[in-house]
Amino acid sequence: MSAKQAPTGAPGAPIGILGGTFDPVHNGHLRLAMELATELKLAQVRLIPNGRPPHREQPGATPGQRAKWIRVATADEPLLALDDRELLRRGHSYTVDTLASLRTDFPDRPLCLIMGRDVFAKLPSWHRWEALFEHAHIVLIERPGLHAELAPEARELLAERGVDDIRALHEHLAGAIYSYAPPPLAISASRIRALIATGASPRYLLPEVILEDIMDTDIYRAPAQSAE
Image: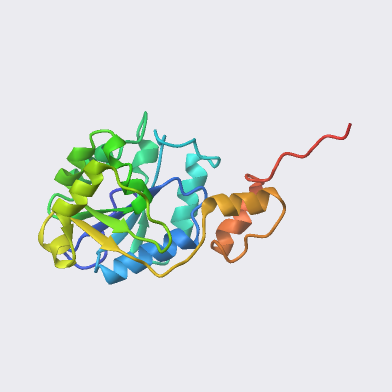
């Protein structure tokens, strides 16, 4: 699926942007994307795997593997799509550059950058973070029991730009912050990798077809200990 494939949802509706390492993509990512597409009336949510994320360690799976898993997982769902533009870009993957690229592709569509409160809390440390609002809204995911302390700049942003009606996401191209609390679904890529590394089963935490591919390649298995 091309990074530039057009959304298949309602004409003019916002496009959701969900970035991450997706190492691997799992049912928590996919269900969140579907919840947002439905509840916020988005035309599409584009899952964008990071190329070289500057704020975290490099993924264990290759770019090709991570793109393949998202492509397979979203193949039968028109509201979700792989966007591989960061994997094709050289150098670090800065969100502001990704949003600028998406704005070029979709000049007349609102864009909604999806992020957790823990990520938003560190937003002022991002590269050219103020420019994010020139290109997109932010959809802030609030999870029960996770209340990250916000930097003063982030608190001010939330106070100034916060909205409580999704119409603001549809009527303007960028600039708002909308908070959304999805139904709880406690699944993480780190837990899946840990289960596989110890020989335990992560079944039902991610699509079966992706689990089969992971097990075939032994990508997350712990290296065998040599006998002394």
